[in-house]
Length: 138
Figure 1 (spheres, rainbow, N blue to C red):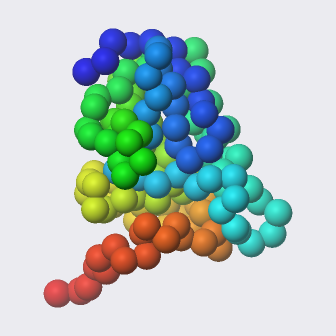
Figure 2: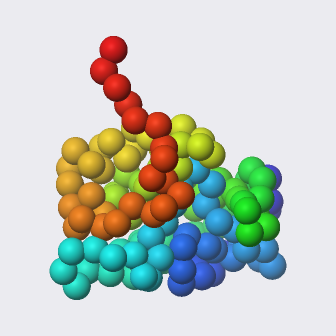
């Protein structure tokens, strides 16, 4: 685990810099500034604002989980011990990325049931999530 430090939000796609390292949040997909939604709501801007709220004035530590296809470091990041990714998905400002992790699937279900964020605004689901498994009743 990296040592705790202050984080700087990189405006697009759920990237944050802690110390000298930039991380993409593991297990979720954060909308970027070009994610189309109904009306004039900007999902990327709302997500970046929430990331800023979650990290401002808090010690952020990130636990390495791997690299994405672009070579960006993937990590679970916590602000004062609270999982940033869980909050982003639970508030509808990110989608769970089930092929990386199942940690946030229930959080996404909660956001969907409450019609929060991207689930309330008809935002286009990112292409990398279009083939994720469907949950079927048993």
